[in-house]
Image (cartoon, rainbow, N blue to C red; front, side, top):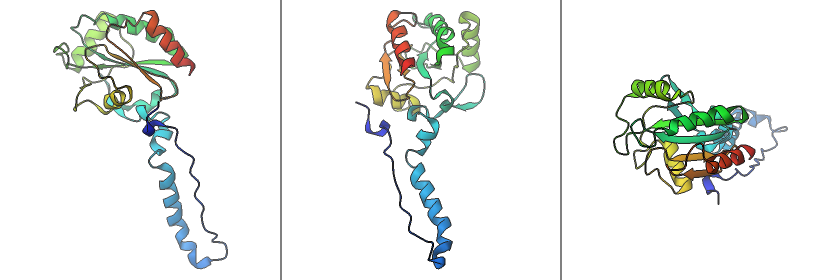
Length: 208
């Protein structure tokens, strides 16, 4: 079941009074227009403009400025918490292969390095970016090192955890958001990027 805060917003109709024959009230039209705009934009306006409540946030790139994740609305989005010194680190190769294979069909892979699990991401953003590029040729979007679990998790991960009921327990945990921006699946660290399970889920998410 889709949580209530992610359900499709109900259409709201607001009836304005007839001001045609009441010139004394005309000054209030501007105020009513402001109220009407506020009613139509809160609380769902930002999500509607973004196209996905989950992606209605921003994050800083490893090399680059803060950017809105709304630019990925309408795509299938694979979100992965990564680390450079983990037994699962070679999954970078499979993630890059997924990105290259499906990007033209509407998939984007978003990497969020984290040092929360085993202290296996000790480097700073510049070091992480260099490692990913030199060792695995990573070209999909990578973001600043972040907390992805617990009360200090970044907002995106708090939402993913709340929706799926599943928090990352190790590096390379995966969340897949379908094109509709609402349907989310979670996959453990041992689910390989190039495995049949994740590929099938991606193809289904692209079709939604």
